[in-house]
Image 1: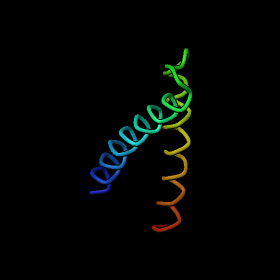
Image 2: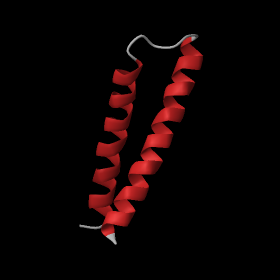
Image 3: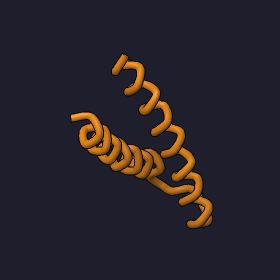
Image 4: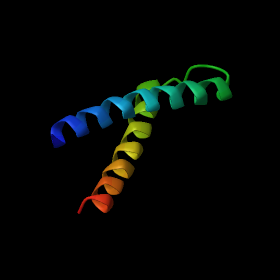
Length: 59
């Protein structure tokens, strides 16, 4: 069951990261040159934060 939770969280993180990247690009005014690198940074930060929250809630 834990695999299902982690899979659903990963899918959610993907969509949230994509949404955040779009918002950042709209604020910047154009597409980023290294768009995939920015996406990687966003999703990495969200993944580490989420894993820390999960560990805190369910030790």
